[in-house]
Length: 273
Ligand SMILES: [Ca+2]
Image (cartoon, rainbow, N blue to C red; front, side, top):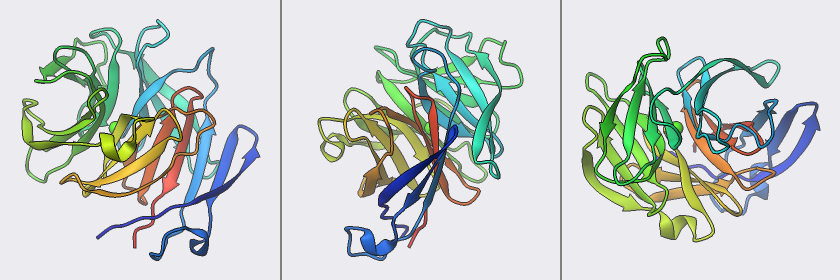
């Protein structure tokens, strides 16, 4: 079983990019054998208050973030290229979301569409946006519950796959039919695990585990099985308590997360036992 235990030790500033390092295994509090992961991060230039990136997606080449329109601007999806050698990212594209304004909280990539979780009430929505034709009115799937936040895609060979989302208010994680948004199985609740001081936000799926960013105070990333069992968690390194979006990058077992309010993106090397 994949199992991680990470311990963040320090950081060194280098211009706009920040490079952080995990401590050696023997410094970790846990008794289990511990992997060492490296964290690199970069900060995008931003205007007053930042872009308010809410969740992330990875399409195999580019990192995408969705901005929820918190500051009254038009909500948009931003395309970012990460230069692995330089260790920094740059905005290389993006577009405004022409659908329902505001509340686009979650983001996932299903191989064809960028999918946003629209966190409205009384019923949330999943929007399908073609990044090659972002000016077209996107179709959407209506959910049977409100306030979805983070969104992740679960690839199934030969099938339509599943979506995973988490509700920001009640803290339930739902597995959804990709085609029609109906709930699959029984949702599980994360409130007791993440604590009252944090709220669930971004969601990622790596093919086996769900990764949940919870923000508010002492932000943490939580690792769950698809069945809803908490496996592990580790602190999110943020200068402000706003670790919102996450996505999985299969190229090397990286987990990305973003601090919404500083537009800082972190790439964590996850080493499994
Ligand atoms: Ca996501």
